[in-house]
Length: 527
Ligand code: BG6
Image (cartoon, protein in one colour):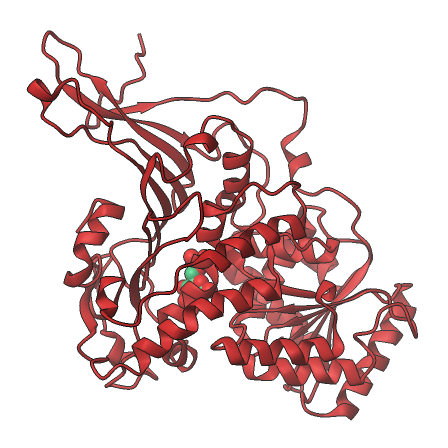
């Protein structure tokens, strides 16, 4: 008889198979809903990595899943003097390289691909682009709906937004234009002042409802599931507060190093690269109040309240709340890897942090006094993104004579990647005559009983943008509040006379610097 215990493992794992009620909805019905209006996506930076590795594969996969409007056009723009055929061949190469998609529909898909060479600082060049887009609209009987995707280096964002404005491409529903949207990739500035400045420039040509600031973490399935998990179950919300929770851990660990992005990363470091955006979003989803409606602005209003309630980090005794590190050499997946300072393009004396653990507090009724530990680092032992909710110990142990004072407290784990799961650890009695306690874990795998198609993060955000849904995108007040919190922290770290001493080296393939191990152990159980 199957008693549900994992006999081969530690014997401590209870796996519970939850059967979803059959609502008569086929799995694919959850993939795409609503109206998808015909439109053209203009990708600036079409010769770059983001276009080949993420955007075109994502669009092609949407096409394979019937997730694109008809007609739908892709216009690649970059400085290179490519022909349309050059662009089509390169994009086909990227699909083949990705290797996980059928190429049988590529010939039909590539008929949507166009290319237009462009000088980013030339009004004449943008005037030609305008004409090119209008001609395409006529040829394909389109209504002038357009998405302008900034897949360029960030220093070009302002220029392109201005040029689109001057060319008349940002205004909606005049001169043959339909709707007009602009997609901005992070970084949204490098501190509060530059974020405000970028936004002012965007606002000269676009209104907030036209701007889509991407955070691909928000489009991860299990991150989206946070809202469902928290607000579609009654049993967790009453204990989701300082009365029952001891601390919260949010970790995004990577095994990858800086790769070929040293030019950007040297200027950014982990706080700008991961904390200002992804970590803040995970924090907001964990800590926010229930929105009154599942609607972009209601959800974003609640997130903004969390950012507004963040207690500023004290600017003395930095290491009480923030530990920074930089990876040295080591082994990842059995292979030798270089130290950060030996990576190509990195200053051999670089003081850029590649690891941070930050303890923050949220000053509001629900959370005051509860530490939230946010951790992110490159070249760590394994890829792991998860949220840990550590509950308090029982207030009094009736078993103190047998089991001692402390009984391990409950822990809820929301796994984002690579394991997409929810698990709850609680205590039970070991079978037998004696009172022996054991921790068991109820484990839910997110894809259990689901066999339909799944949208990758970029597919989801592209589809939402095509459909005009802002729920997974940053609103400007959120961006500015996140920077308001982080800018003084960055200034404290970057202007500190002990900057070099406070950057702790760590071996690649481990769990970060020695100085962070006590906190790491709280969150990962390692260290
Ligand atoms: C990006 C960062 O936003 O997120 C990268 O710029 C990081 O440095 C990446 O590697 C991590 O994303 P994911 O989805 O692999 O966790």
